[in-house]
Length: 149
Image (cartoon, rainbow, N blue to C red):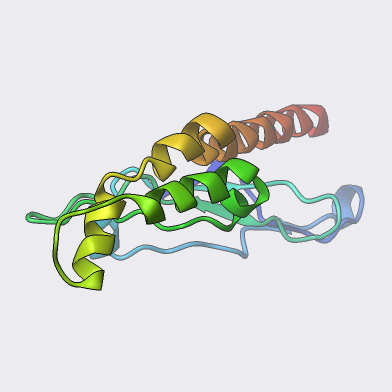
């Protein structure tokens, strides 16, 4: 699959002719895995505290399977920190819905719930924040690599 970053993943931290560097740590992927995650990549990160470089595996987006269902949304614990969350849940609970059993009524209420939309507005896209921080780490690693050559 190849990699990005510094060529070697281990360094004995000695100087000049006694220095040994090797690519000991590796990540492997089967052809099937590569088909499922075609945008994946492996990056050798720098480490100031170890003689081994960690490997970041970015899987990218998985190829959607045919007939795959829409992603379900889950309740996130961070929502409990915001007082608006309780208000929204109480509002949802108090809504009148069509007749039916308790699970049917709950499902109908959840279909009209705006918690995910509210979360994106309130907390921002977490995936975007993670990507921005990983980009910052990559930029810092590049800067450090350039300083070490």
